[in-house]
Image 1 (tube, rainbow, N blue to C red):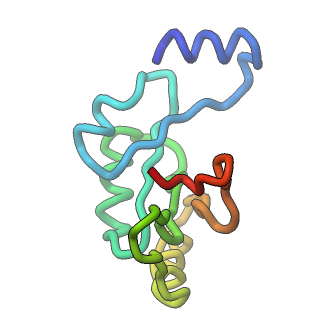
Image 2 (image 1 turned 60 degrees about the vertical axis):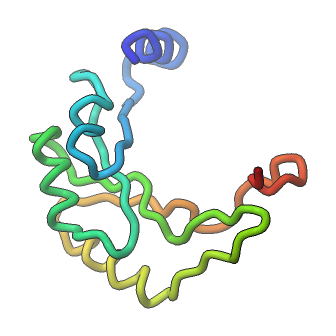
Length: 123
């Protein structure tokens, strides 16, 4: 990860903000970053927002709370049923995130995606 950071800083800029995204698992946050990168978490509707941000804070003591991948749904695979969530369910947990002071959220994947050469991500 250090080599990747050095390459990005060399070709982009020393001013570029780099961060990592890890699931809300203690070991993932502990091992998924290096001290020079900002640690963010990813989780979707149904997860305890307070506990999720508390775990981020354990490994990222300063800065904003950030859910860099708030899942608004899930991907579909060939041969499986379509995954869908009620908008009200997603909005309920999104409201909880937005109620945190100094919190940011990225909706993942809000709309669209790739057809991966007409394979739709199916395996």
